[in-house]
Image (cartoon, rainbow, N blue to C red; front, top):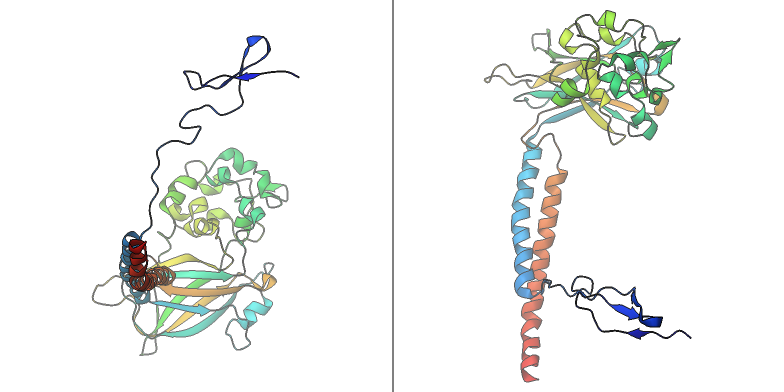
Length: 367
């Protein structure tokens, strides 16, 4: 049996074991240092009534007013939503929803009347919303070529394999390629105000300024100098489900091709199956007159986007915004709930401490 002896701690803190023949062997035990032996100085809070109770009350007194402010601000945002899917037979868009498909050659139009009970001040944002559309599917999210979307000529002619099966069509590269671009929302929405005298007034809708600045000026770009898009996209073909090529999306050269803002907004995929995307902006022109007056309106829809195949729904949303964004009462409710719970717990613990704290102190003194 092999004998060994343990030597005292060396000056450098290492622990050594003396083996046969007097040779010094390094031990597998941790070094005898403050760090490895967990002897470093540490701070550990001592939870007493004097520290816990004020913390609960302070959190409650801070969170509850913030939550009330957020909730009131959210409720002051005016929002109107109308579903124009056309599922019900009484819906004006019922015939379009039943008969229209991606292969339809003639667009279908429908008109939906509605009324606003309140006037809308400041700028009004028009959104389109889709339900049961899973843009967060892994293969769907990856089905794009960011190099092509940035305007690189090499990727324009040779799309990435990630775009398959929407990379080529009839032996021509698709621009833009991928499933995201192929399924781009293409309904046309127009808004009319029904004047009391019987005339219909078209509400001007602004199609620019709806995309993120970084998306339009950094992530997306047209090939070449962008002056003659027809020539730059020569040799490519449009996505299978599109009615016109990418260089005919808009007559404005600053909003055409890959930098078309409707296209850019669609390419930013949503995280949830029910989502909304900004479609147009109704700018306020006169500070003395509301952007949208109270009264009757008509939504004219060119029904190009079928949703029956995935049991989806379509809707149009009109909304104002505030400093905290769009209408979302959840954040205010969350702050109010957390603040109320903390304040309630503070009151309960204060009662318990007042009732039993002195009794415990008296018992300690008597002992």
